[in-house]
Length: 229
Image (tube, rainbow, N blue to C red; front, side):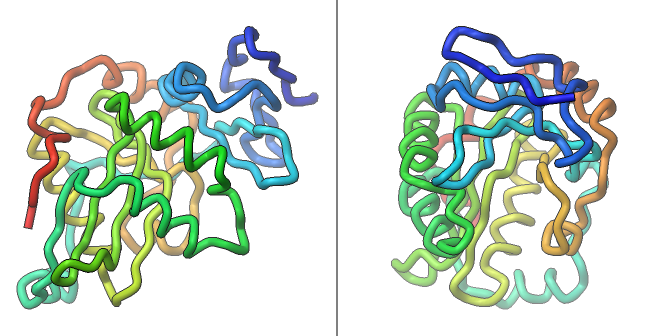
């Protein structure tokens, strides 16, 4: 079985057609237009590729993510939150967050200029959001991702001071849940996401969850630029 090759007008195939090796590779080609990206995320698909590659589209099995009803914060992290003077905001500086995420992963190169510009456009259209952590006036951590109804698909996070990205994650989980969010998608399993409490989820289960939540509204104030700590 081979991945589907997309031209600009060909829609995505069913995510269940994704390969098992490499896990989740579904399609190759097309572009990173906002319309294409929105369609991808609404169908449990995301882009992930390097500079020397065409656009690669993925829908792995299993996924990893967090049901917000089971979100917990460790005792040590609760202590850090109480004592820390770091400030956390929503959508105050999306461009700097994605830029810092790219700089932190220079060797991986998947946040290339095309990806950078595509997600800035998504943000301008209201489909991509950021969380920032500030030490006085300096950005020291954060994360960004794409919102699909009551699901938030996390793309990347960074920190330059200890625990800043964890702080962003946990306070965002509380903020998102308080505004009607139900699930944080982490896409591909890695040790850091497991340390945040995320768990693997079969692709079928994720797609079923996405289908029932992607058209349900959040409290409209969720993505308003604001300070949440």
